[in-house]
Image 1: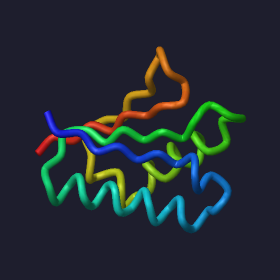
Image 2: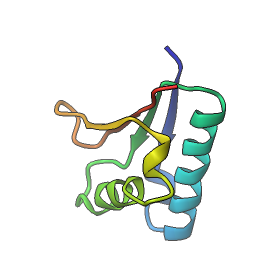
Image 3: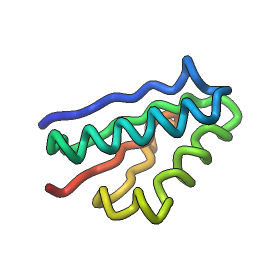
Length: 84
């Protein structure tokens, strides 16, 4: 099963770069028919994870994927599942 990984640690404080990286990852997954995108916002204060979850609810992004899974064992990880 193909999986794309996006680690946001290095750009955690640069808002426009975060959105651009998320948009690229979602577009790549859709274009390459990747089943899962693993987004690593890290544990921190939880603000970056909230930003990722808000991004995923955008009306232009929501139709691209099937479901979002917040990893119970790893708070700093979000899995986005696609149905192609």
